[in-house]
Length: 139
Image (cartoon, rainbow, N blue to C red; front, side, top):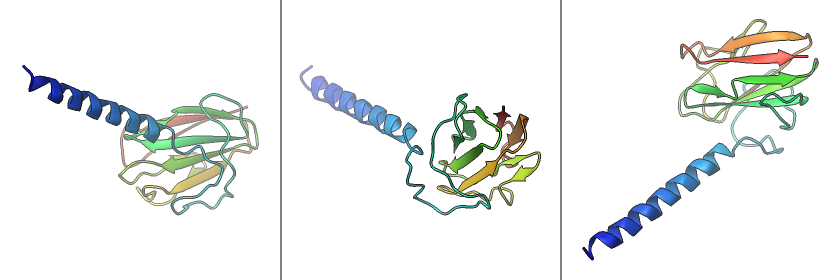
């Protein structure tokens, strides 16, 4: 049984490292430096400052694991949403009155921003991945 214990410690250490890596990966995209990767946007970049149902001037949405995260964001009229592709595959952001570019044209690290000048609920999707949908609520 003495040979089992070192493997158990090794497995526990590997699990802890994996968990830490997943937590660190989930913390990305919130910096104010707007660095890293090219930008596929005709809109002006703004510092990251919110999302996930808050009424921040700018909401950030990550494209990861074939989904938008968060799926629903709220911004005030005149606010912006910045989408960042944190996935290993290409995506796009297509909604009524806004489009990030060509189908699947946002590569890893690319961003797209859109400013919402009218209040309402705006649904959008990735045309590459059926079921990958999100909503922007503008109040």
